[in-house]
Amino acid sequence: MIQSNFAPIPELYVPRDSVRDYRERSGSLVSWDLTRRQLCDLELLMNGGFYPLKGFLGRNDYDGVVENMRLADGSLWPMPITLDVSESFAAALDEGQEIVLRDPEGVILATMTVTDRWTPDKAREAELVFGADEIAHAGVNYLHNHAGKVYLGGPVTGFELPVHYDFRGHRYTPNELRAKFQKLGWERVVAFQTRNPLHRAHQELTFRAAKEVQANLLIHPTVGMTKPGDVDHFTRVRCYEAVLDKYPAATTAMSLLNVAMRSGGAARGALAWPDPP
Image (spheres, rainbow, N blue to C red):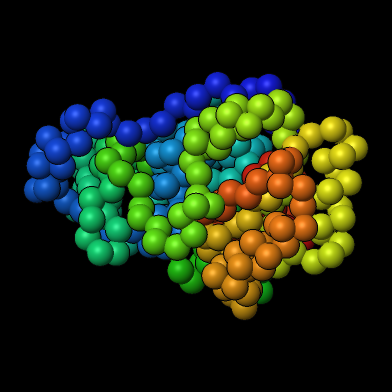
């Protein structure tokens, strides 16, 4: 629940009037084509959704998060957000080198200064983050069979967010959402995050939760990477739109959350990316 805390969140963009110069300068840099999960991570890094992170985690922050859910400065953070790449790509980089991060179409979204490069112990990461090194677990399977073998860490400088052509009216950055709350005069907000279509029980649960604390309600569905076999987000969002009409219009809103679900279990999931109902 958010209560009277709508101050702007720091974002990681270059000044708007400098984007063109940055793009021209970065055009000749070595580039990495982001995976689907990395696109989700970069979007939330740039728009402040992953605040206080200033980029992909370096080695010290990674170790702290994996071992005790703390960044090196002691800040609470539940899951390691790293840029996983191939061994060949990592081997060609120097410490302090700036690289370009592109979407699958080749659009430059950001640059990153590589401050750390290491080969993680993935079995250890799986045990500490997911509770077991079992391939049957979706997060562990991704870690071993899809993620690159080398991790890069370093600060990110954003140019623009990835473009979403679907459901634009339901997509807000954290600061846009806070501004919306202020405009509506909402002082207390209960948020419900889910990856599944809403059922009648969910509707009643969320309605009662908001009513109990006299708060407004934000339906906050995950539309980034979910589990294999999950209902696609196009279908789910249409379901949410239909159910939204059953809530009081003046006290309920919906914003899509483009986060890559990691299924970190109860302790880590309670902080950020749960296995939602």
